[in-house]
Figure (tube, rainbow, N blue to C red):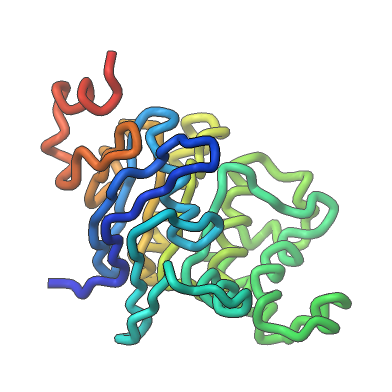
Length: 253
């Protein structure tokens, strides 16, 4: 049995205005899994991912990352530097690509290394030859190396999301959190992006936790499905066991 890389234990998130976004969520994630989280809008999917890498703070509960047999208590990290180190290990891909439009594809990818270089080198964009080769390697992995010196604003949405994936891989993450990565893309581009996320999972062994709206994509790519409803975990298991009755439970009418 694969070792656990992430352990989520009874976590809750209540916003200042009283809305309870997460209500006692618990599950473990094994190293190398491709986990898809589904649920209607407002179910808590995005809040969950943001709490895992401390973009938001939990109200209660605990999250542990097992970093090469070292147990990191994510929910207890307070120091800004430690939070930055955590985000190297738990990269995140967003619905918005968050790229610099007028910069080249390779330049955007190299931005993923900013946490590893000194401030003055980052200001002047002084990346090493080894880092540039690494960036090109990840661009080849996501099938877009031929666009390395093209400006990002000349790319399609699907291509830009692949650049964002390559940029995140420059952090050398152990876990890749992906929040609705294809919700703004057409079906063809969505499949291409998901294909490359699966490739990252298989070839690099990176654990992926991905929020999706598309049930067809869930069926095609998930090794395991977690379903949230109104901030509660209501399903955790195999894709094949989610039938029409489960869909109705998860999404309502």
